[in-house]
Length: 449
Image (cartoon, rainbow, N blue to C red; front, side):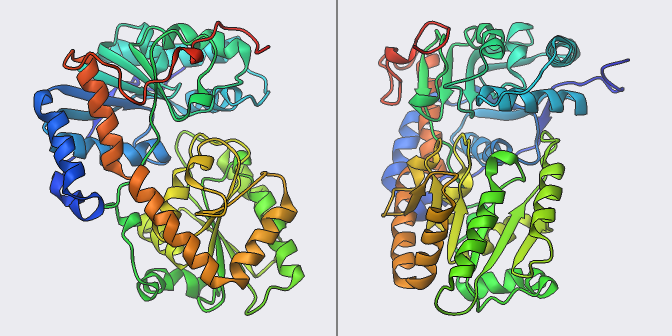
């Protein structure tokens, strides 16, 4: 059977615009922007490319949609490219994602060599990507590093927790990782064993200029959501608990549902609460539909629980729901970062988050929300109850969360770190940046002892 229908998969460029730097002054101040200009000054015209597997759906695509225009606004010849792949490829790389996060599941040699590698070679045969710096995102395009199709200094940007990956798959991918000039991880703890190139810590960030991150009044949020609220019988005067993510077993929506029901049964003060799940389907995530079907079956005819899927005007709806919600819940069992946590905090909404992955960088327990174990239904329910019963506490936590995001997780900080690496690879700077991870991360491959 032919692996690919025609046309042959190929690397293609995504249309982007240029974003003026001064547009970010209201959010981070002129001193931060002046520092970015200083970093970018000797990089004018430098070719900087990002390569991933989809232009639609998922946090990586969302970040690149904002970061690339900002890098262009700073004077770099920045571009965003996407590799081609079919459904079989995305099914295999979904398995890669799970296995790299330590989730055991079967995968065949045919899937690795007959689908994953053939996809890489088909893209390579269709043309090359030339740039001074190329940032390769996640495992999907990683094998292109071994094909000769990527001409330039390579950085592998891993958005996944690879601290305890499936040993066989990790050994397969390591040679491609170590062909790169460096590897970027969200946290030091995520660095897999055997990485022999310089490693750097960069957190994802949100764009305050994006429609979903436009801070609105409560009244404006209700107006945005009015068609959905009316369609599904949701009362904006009753407290809403929101959970926004793709439908995925690791997003733990079943536990959120159970915690909500347990909290509701305990009888919070005031009007009865409502739970809204909001999630989109991503083209590189073939398992989402099954997870959603299972979750709906568990919910049954519970009129206090609503599912919004692939809604129109998604970004405005996400921002408005984050703004309107009394509390936001994100208790993943595995998580690279969970950018939606910063989106909720930016809207001034406190977050109940799990002690998993990059969530712990965003949710400071007792300051911007509450941290819980992802399977602790009672603790999640208790924090839901507290945020409903103590609106002043919820408002205070939300205000501190907004300040926390302003300092660490807005797009100019992401640009700063990428500019710093570009200067290093271009030979402008010789000293290592302050976010370089130390040599302790460079362990020999093999099981942890």
